Image: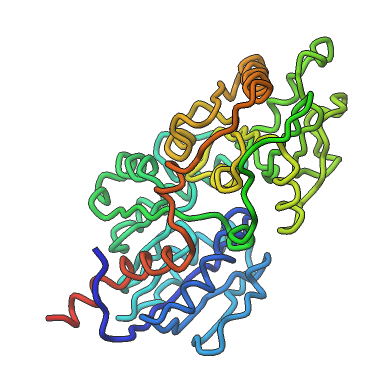
Length: 370
């Protein structure tokens, strides 16, 4: 239930480590909504020193905007920030941390967790990323006592985070997010204009969990058994997972307008990722009215329910059969109806900002009301 606010409270925002593609795009929609919320004044915004958000232009009536300068390698600097130098954020003003890891400071702190790599079932993998995620989980565990509340995007993530860190189980709130602001004004597709073969798109950066590598299993002998005209993937040509497959097109990073055009031309979204805390392309495809082929995993079911066509993300044959299924359905005149799934998702970013502010400032509001 939303608390009625009679005071315009101050709120600090911390995003010094947000540089990844997905998290950056999310905050490019969320930050302006937080700033224009009439119930709070954003008194401080602590920005990263790299990536697109390093040059974020705050609203004129927001307070201090400052980049967090890192002199050491990012991973080491991040550990030191979370464990030792975060005392600079001590104070009574609520602090909304938008970069996954709690800070060791004395403040009313809410942490927005956007990654599933912090979950305890991941174990340790002998790689640079594996070591980084293992250390992040230890930092999360050590610092979780300093945070009053945590925000995640789905009930699946809520349950998994509570299982991984039982001490915070009653501190986790679920706030879903809509499509990025650049897509909200686009016109959804209501039906298909399907012809003979599928035009698919998979928008994802080249992280290992995005599972582009499964495409390398496509057999040239069975190339014609894939009813696909084109599969556009947003990788550079030198990262092509299967260069010999002519219908896989590496188109590189697409701008907002290019993504809207690509969705408008596609017959469906292909999503391959083995590990997500949310899965924004799934929400984008539902908003645009597109069919979805995605892994048979909890994060996908949480968003798509029974509306998607599911496959085993480790099986190239399972993927092929899912694509054959979509081809058969579209050939028979089928088109998905995502209205029920979309009803569970906020209609815009102002709704999200209000819900996050309500969580982040709740203890302060309770004190003021006494």
